[in-house]
Length: 437
Length: 202
Image (cartoon, rainbow over all chains, first blue to last red; front, top):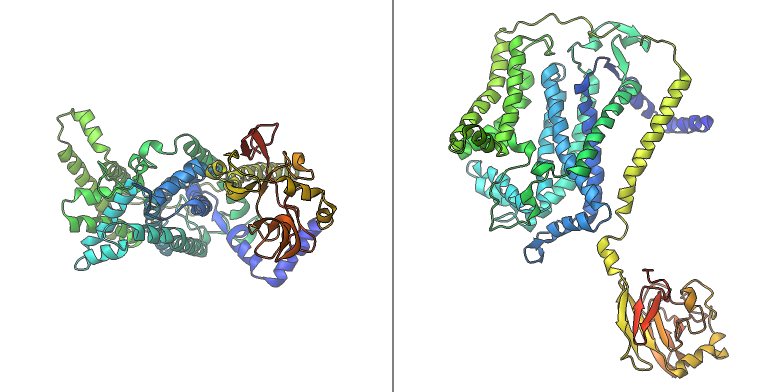
């Protein structure tokens, strides 16, 4: 048996001599720092969710019809086909809930993954390109998620499509023409649904896959960062894996494949719980208004995006000017691209950075979550439960919103001032990762 | 890292158990995806048994019904038509006169290929390439056969069948036409899709 495998391996090596070196470069001879902690699960989990979305998506596309034409009055073919998947297709409900839950889990994983980067300075030299490619993945993912949410053609799909596409009307001069061009109609309609379906199942997944490959290729050129922010590649060499191997590096396979397998197990347990028991997550993963068919004459009582867009949506809503609101929302995402150049500090990890960095990063994370709550219409409930029924909801919502916007953008401004003018007092970064033996 | 001695047996055990559990999980996860290709509940409902009234079908007349999206013909065969089935003249020209091939339920594996001799219930689809053969009830010379004994002629590639759907020799179709499961609910009602004794769906 073993001989057969050896011969088979030889057959491939003769014909594709580049395969084994590639396997070694990225897995068995990719030496990652040995001190990865919990926060380093999220990269591999993101790939897992991506695979889940592709596989479940392929199967959903077999049963879904991207048509806004009505099969019975008031019910479009698209909406009906989603109900068909839920009720008639064998195990269709499971495949769809895996896909909807996967969408939300994707953002949970990605937000942790990005926060990990901010904590340990993974965006800093020499990993700026890794960070930029990651941000492009985040952008593509947002577009992918938005278009996917439109497909069931429920009432929130329809109005979400209308509101989000209308954001482009804030573009000077060509705004309204641009909106009509994107929708292919004057209101979201069959043309919109068809092009969003095509982009959702073909164009954006291709872009995402390409970006993920580039993200990993860029990472493997420079090597992984770690919770200590120590560059193991430039540290002492030589351990039991070889004389030229970074002393604190271990092969990704089997060490981190096995560790990530553990993370995958726990993650799948959480996902299975959601998919099987609470697939709507009380309206957070699938909004209640999306269980009614799209209706161009009836607006839902509150149009709000799914939770993963709410922090950015809250910025748009708090600013009382259409143009400025859209601009601020765009900037809130754009500014993340510039993080590697705004942060001039040489020390990477939060473990050795100045106290104020820890404070502002915490505030930034809190502001992001609170903005999410505002965008998700949760704050009015909190205000009335604290201040009684007479509390001024509008005032408090705007007041808290403005503070959070100030913190959000202030974080980046502070980071530049703090590091550019050398106000940061850092601790001594160790020579090697702290957990070496 | 503290223990530099590798226990290979233990390592192999862990690798194998992890792989087995992992494969079990993947296998379980694959099942719903494979099953999603099975006929959906809607298709299964469309494949439900059909009960039809045959009380008004005159001798020699053919009526078509849809069952699982295929045409099922019910013919009230005349005595003359039934009589042709046993003649040596017809039987000697058939590929499978005794219905040996599994193209009918066991209770129709007889000379008339039916429960009651006069009532033919059959899926009217040619076994060659799936066309719907024409009903040619006449006993006597036809343009396509000077000695026609009543039966079916496929318009596509001229396969011929006798009035029990048995295929002639020397035509492209390889098999007799299919008789679906059915039973008589009473004298004037036939249910297509359910065997006589067991009342469950076929």
